[in-house]
Length: 83
Image 1 (cartoon, rainbow, N blue to C red):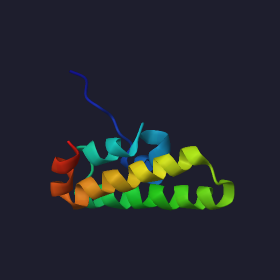
Image 2: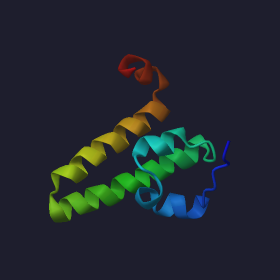
Image 3: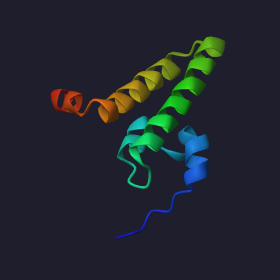
Image 4: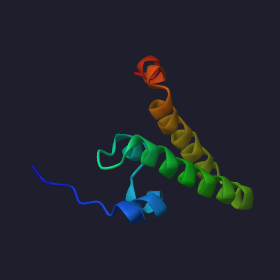
């Protein structure tokens, strides 16, 4: 078993550079629930800014994943419906 090393500060400021997907944040054991939500909110804001500037379809899909991962944290019962 390997122990995961995470630079918490960097992960919070640059979630896209740290995590493979927004769901990685939702499952991260080294973050509190509040840190996960704040990090997802930060990532969402960055994607929305990029969408405004670039209008990329790939970024739009990523935005949907961010919102879904955040919803799983704030509405645990919604996860049961999607599983």
